Image (cartoon, rainbow, N blue to C red):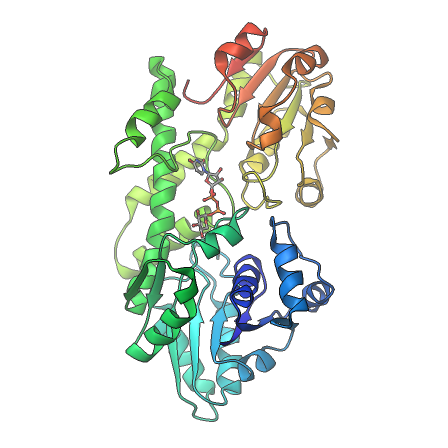
Length: 431
Ligand code: UDX
């Protein structure tokens, strides 16, 4: 099939490369000329395991192309996926300007029947509105349909998630659109759910909101465990073994970050409000997360009294392992709070340093080449991201290098007993 994907960011590029790999002819579009130049020379503008190779292979096979010209993409494809950004506005609602601009371009360039599919996460009823935008600019009076096909991929495992989805949700207006999309997704052999467009849009927001709620719930229980002297890891296991609950997304820690959960939660709260429902439950999910992110700082203050002049080592800056994404990462809140308390911050992340330097351009942080360099002379170390390499640290060496032996394990990666035996003052989350 001939496909264009408008917006070559995280979702767009993975979608485009994967559809090409399934044998389709794909044009990836982006209005950022620099990004397109990079992509044309086989460079990926962000870190995602396996993506560079997938792009290279499909470009070489002639199935994947890049352009900055939206019109070119639209005219040369039958299915158009919209994967542009929907960043949050000040009130938390989604900014749909980029979708509107793409809608205009699509309308102007329609040269025959096309199926236009929303891939970006959008508030419910965006499909109806998108149809009206395209209609307004549809100078050739061409026939078209709109559909919603939300994406559930996670950063760091994006290709695997795309190729092995739990379900494919297709929100459509009619049988014709359903048939086209079912055929496109057939090779994935995954369960397909066909709905109306409004329902598909809500499925995406509700899924992310539910997962955020699961994390905030377990974090709230972790706080109870800490007060009561129980172990959240065992509690989570005990809860998760109930098939109705499930073990996934019950890892207590210092909260969720990234560009999806916080943004989508805010957008879902905002759209609910606009529709006349005050989604208080989700507001509390957000409150718990905000509180959780700053727990390491609270724990350090309890231990040291004051953090003024203390050297605190941060291990992990990205919002989760296997990504170079720092958007809304707990590390940002933690480091800002530490610096406000007068602490001196040293940090290490396996891939994140360049983004961090931009984010903390006004803050004096010592960026280190290894976790051991972070440990040298530190009063405490905070595990912020559970990168695999932190799980296998030489803790005896770490202890020798540190000034004081405090470890705040924000992701519960270590065995408390083992660390205490080695002589660390160990504080996990909820245990
Ligand atoms: C998420 C959704 O999983 C995905 O379906 C959607 O398309 C985009 O948003 P992503 O943001 O890439 O994906 O990351 P995910 O792996 O879901 O983790 C989100 C955050 O939750 C991370 O900060 C992670 O550390 C945190 N988390 C996750 C927990 O704190 N505990 C858990 O048990 C699981």
